[in-house]
Image (spheres, rainbow, N blue to C red):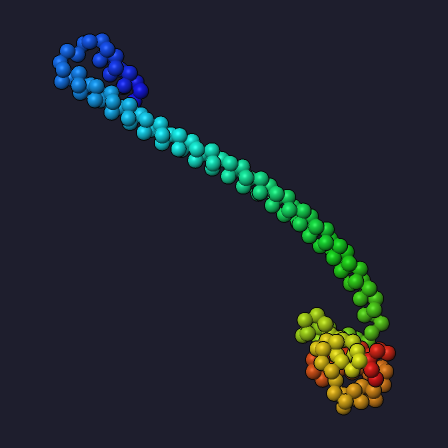
Length: 173
C-alpha cells in the first residue's frame, strides 16, 4: 500500500496527469490508501500488543510448568526412595517370616494363610480387652468363657470374623 501510495503521489506531483477528473480520482485513491494504511497499522499494533501479552503468559506458564515439574521430580524421587525402603523391609520381613513359619505346625500355617487370603492380608488378630482387633467387635461372655477354658496351645478363632485370636496378658481373660 505504501508503494502504491508513493507511486500515485509521484504521478500526481509529476504533472503527467492533466485531466481534472483523473487528478481528483487519484487524490481520492491516495486518501483512501492512507486511511486503509492507518487502519492496517492499528490492526498490526493491536496484534503486536496481543502477541506481547500472549508471550508474557507463555513465559509465566513455562515457569509454572518448570516449578511443577521440579515438584514432580522431587515427589518421584521420594516415592522411589520409599519404594526401595519398602522393598528392603519386605525382604527382611519375608526372611523373618520364613524363620518363624518353620517353627509353626504345617496345618496351622495352612489355616493362617487361608484366613489371611480371605481377610485381606490379616489372618490372626490380637484379643485385647475381650475385643477382637481384627473385626473390632467385643466377644460376648460365652465366647470369652470358651477362650478362658481353652488350653494355651489350642487355636481359638473369633466367631465374627473367623480370624485366629492371639491371646496375651491384655486379653482381659
